[in-house]
Image 1 (cartoon, rainbow, N blue to C red):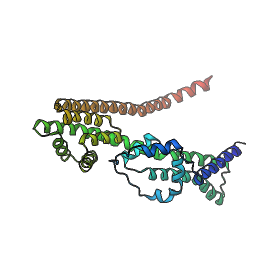
Image 2 (tube, rainbow, N blue to C red; image 1 turned 60 degrees about the vertical axis):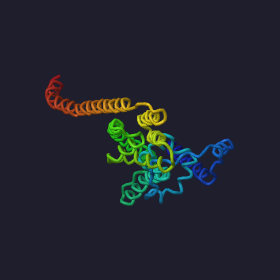
Image 3 (cartoon, helix red, strand yellow; image 1 turned 30 degrees about the vertical axis):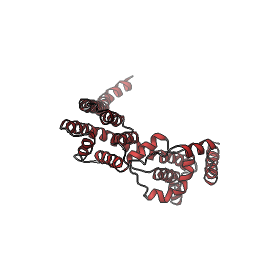
Length: 297
């Protein structure tokens, strides 16, 4: 009974996905009018890559997954930070899900040819589990990559703040301080800061507007705060050297606290294998005595 229920649910989901792919839903009139009247958004600063093996294999499934509203807003930000386009992400989800569904069936067929039949329920359940895992794996991968890149960006941002306020203390203007300081650093974070400042220079926008946009794309609130402080200096002539130095110190303190917490968590995780080894040693010592007591009763 369970097998027929699972088969029926899978067939229904497949037919529904096929109908959505062949006849995508039309957008509502309000959405179309809002898109026509909304001013164009600035071009994204973060670059993404649209190439890869998954795009070639999973391209037919991309429109259907987009029609379902995938990926979400948070996953889309993670993808932008990781440098992966939405098309590549959706294609990977489709390819890995189909591979997870078919892999147990292929393995069962090979074993059946060898004389070791596994029946129908095992490849069906295993295929569903692996399909769900394959569908969710790209989301988890993007989340982990984005978290690592954001952490590295915050470390680089604290150094960049120090460079900016030192340059301001030397008598440079705000624009020159932002541009010269970014040329000193190396790595992914300083590359993104340089792209933001170059985009501002080419589009004749203010540097703090580009930094604010970059902070929104990266989902790094500290960069948006930096843009707000620098905008006060650029528009109203406010003295922000002390504020930038305080922000850099606060960032370093926060990073040190996070590093200490991660080290303590790692220490606690290391104690678990020792406890398991100790319990095994106690069981090895007490088992012969316990066996003698139980046999003597």
